[in-house]
Amino acid sequence: MYRPWQLIKKTLIVFEFEVRKLRHDPLEVFVRLIQPILWLVIFGSIFNRYRIIDTGNMSYISYLTPGVMAQSLLFTSIFYGIAITWDKDSGILAKLMVTPTSRGSIMIGKALSASVRVLLQSIVIVLIALLLGVTFVIGVVNVIGIIIVIMLASTCFASLSIVFASFLRKRERFMGVIQLITMPLFFASNALYPIELMPKPLQYVTWFNPLYYVVDSLRALLITNELGSVLFHIGVLLLITILFVFAGIWGLKRLLD
Amino acid sequence: MKAIDAHNLTKIYKGNIKAVDNLSFEIAEGSIFGFLGPNGAGKSTTIKILITLARPTQGTIHIFDLDVIKEPSKVREVIGYVPQELSADGALTGYENLLLSAKLYDISIKERRTRIDTILALLDLTQRAHSLVDTYSGGMIRRLEIGQAMLHHPKVLFLDEPTIGLDPAGRKLVWEHIKKLNQEEHMTIFLTTHYMEEAEALCDQIGIIDHGRLSVVGSPQQLKEKVGVGTLTFVLDPKNFDLSTNLTTLFSDVEGVNISQLASNTWQLKISHPDIQTLKILRSLLQHNILISDLEIRGPSLEDVFLKFTGSRFDEESSHSEWKAIKGRRRTVRRVK
Image (cartoon, rainbow over all chains, first blue to last red):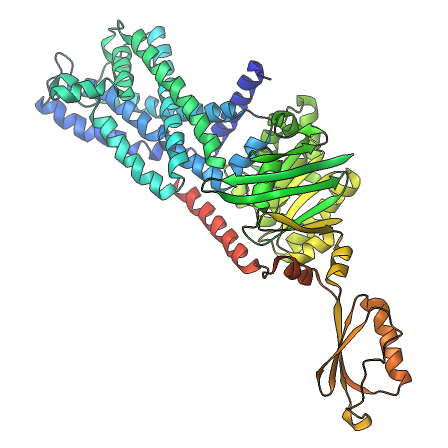
């Protein structure tokens, strides 16, 4: 029998304990921050000073900040599949699935916890960007919007990575393939440069890149405050996320059989 | 009532691999059932089907009259499961691991605290309850996992290789806890094992599985009797005895004895009940003034039973190294993450 209350309750329990793990070992969250900080401080400052990329009346470092945030989001949540293969190898996943907890709760609870890491990282990125002279839009709607985008996008990529994990099964293989996916997603997006600067065919590719919607929404909510297309982009993101969550549930079952 | 009732279970994997082949068995409520078999015999697949993680290609299973295939979520409420791997979450404390299980099994807030404390005390884990499981020894982790699996008072507890990789002291402690659960809580226990002495120490009933089929089921004593025999070997003292004498009829008054000559001065008797027969045989030897210089008695062992019904050697070594690999991997991953 389908009980929505049970589904929500169990999802929150799985989520709670993922966050507790994080609390026991917070170092990892900040180790993952080194890469985005390097992008921002070194790459960003140099490109900012020489105005290498035309970003209109926005400074390049302001343009880059949401992009770097999205990058840390992508890289952090896409590695959730590794945690899942580990849970599978160690029997944790099997044990979880023998309790009266639906697969959906396990899947969403785990994927959602990726967003906590990302939120923490995003706060640090914002602080560093402030030091670099970036000015942010301040507003309740903007903050809520940012949180929604981060939660959706983290869940989306974490689910995607669980689907990959169910096919690749071995951690070593997973690492290789994930590198192969994240870099194109990152470069074929508007994280580092406006898509108008890309060759025409590549511009069409970005329409199918979930990261594009993430970066665009974050940029509007953080920097430009041009909120016209944000709702639409969040809608697209929501659809992709729902799709990936179902695929992830299927992947979870596949992983154990 | 039957705790587990499995009928004609068959599981065929992709590529026509028959992991389980028409398996039927019943397990009585309150008993400890041991599932024995060489690696790849179908033990893991069977346990996966029983605990609702895999669907059989054919057949039916009921656990306390609940249909495992049709009502898996109801079945999950009445079973507990401890996987073969050390599966308590190392990134959480022992207490948190128990709390997670308590919440997932919908144990009320009021009950949670007392149940967790009781279990921690029962399993000698109270002192380390708030340390990360990563710092626990293998035996402690196993005990914690058994605690997690029994928190909701399941009717059937499934233990997959419960003492693999534990040192003798840790193993003995786990055995004691398993027995206690069975006797005091009247919990039915289904376990798989590689260790003969474990099967002997714990199980009321043993089923031996080979190539996906159940070769034999019975109590340890019944199974040993099926193999028939232990052996009693003696060496005659040639100074006092004419070696050409035929001894074949000497023990005709002792029931169920089979005699054969191994060497000119060495005879071997196959015996089914060493405890009763040995004395009779020795008495017989004395009565005929036969002096012996050496004597060896070996009782029938479960290992003999296993060899007879599977035709393969027990593979303790490889499973042990497998476990080591798992444990090694666990440590590295923790570091890499």
